[in-house]
Structure formats: C-alpha cells, structure tokens
Image (cartoon, rainbow over all chains, first blue to last red; front, side):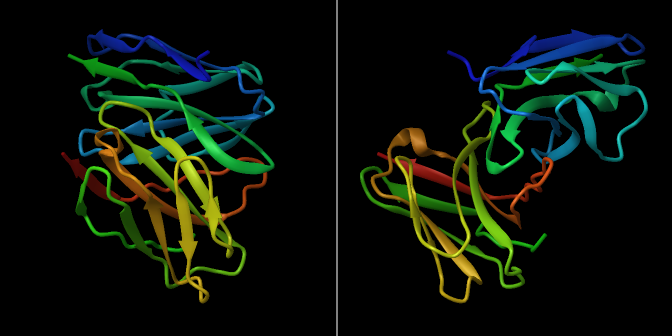
Amino acid sequence: DTAVSQTPKYLVTQMGNDKSIKCEQNLGHDTMYWYKQDSKKFLKIMFSYNNKELIINETVPNRFSPKSPDKAHLNLHINSLELGDSAVYFCASSQVTGGGQYFGPGTRLTVT
Amino acid sequence: DAKTTQPPSMDCAEGRAANLPCNHSTISGNEYVYWYRQIHSQGPQYIIHGLKNNETNEMASLIITEDRKSSTLILPHATLRDTAVYYCIVRVEPGRGYALNFGKGTSLLVTP
C-alpha cells in the first residue's frame, strides 16, 4: 500500500500550458504539503494545508494554486508554465500533533 | 529554527556502523532534532527525531549530547541501500503543520 502517492510521475509540457499534479495520502494525516526540489537539489516548502485550510504559503508565484478537496488530497495546479518551473515536486503529509513528514515519490516536471 | 552544520560527504564500509554528525549549537530548549534521508530519485524519508533523550527505532539511533548542541545519527549496520543524502533539521515540535528547512545534508556513500 502506497502511503503518499502522486500522479503523474513525469510531466513534460510546453511553456504557457496549464497543468495539475495530484497527491493522495492514506495515512490518515491531517496536514499535507508541497515541496519543490530544483536542479541544485535544494528542497523548499511551497504550501501546507491543515484540514483543508491553507496554513503555509511561501513566496510562490500566483500561477501556483494548491487545492485540497479533503484531508487526504492536495493537488497543485500551475498556470502559464515557465522554463523555471522545471523541477521535482514532492507532496508530503504529517499529523499536526507531530512526528515525521511522509513524502511521495515526486513528480518530475519538465517545461520546454 | 536553529541552523545545522553537517559534513558534505562521508564514506562507510558495508556492514559497519555509519555515524553521521550534526552540529546545532544555537538550538533552543523547545526545538527537536529531525533526521531525514533522500535516496537518489526518491522522495525524502523520515528516519527519527528527538528532543534530548537518545532515541532508537528500526532504522537508526539518534544520540543527542547533554548540552544538545550536537547529535549523531547511527546506522548500526550500513548496507548499500543506505547510500543517500542525510539531512539533519532542527525545529520546534509542530503545531498546525510545519515546514522542513532542508539544507545541503551529508552525502553518505556505503561501499562494498
């Protein structure tokens, strides 16, 4: 059983397109996150949702819009894709009470 | 969050204990030490965390010095599959979700 899953695993698209990445967790966690890992391998937080409420919103362009339909899902929609958006995007989840964050396998986005 | 310092790389022979150090001299009393690792092309994996007592789980042991200014992650019998980048992260125990600030970590190479 996959704890945190993401789809798609790979996404290749052209500049200017709009795309979405989906994330689902079956751990019963109440908090979910999106992280971005750039070409230099630095991992940075983008967003965090707790019980469908946005609680962390780092300095991310407005073209990125997270949506959490329920506690088990957190999707990331990206408008007007740019070359600089090329990266690996990781979804994660945790319990608000503490413990570790559990990450998905990542979605490698390539914008051409 | 307190800043952490880790060596950029380490080697370990297969079957031996891998001891990964982390300095966090500015740690506050309510900050925990978390360890994660990222195996190539995979999502980060939570390993262990602790406040001041030593902790052990099925993956590793965490030894925190009495003054809490440094810690060591111990993989008791390293295998080739333990080759990864290991991240030491210090932060307060989460409330309504929390961001992990990944640094550069230590690249551990386990050799046959």
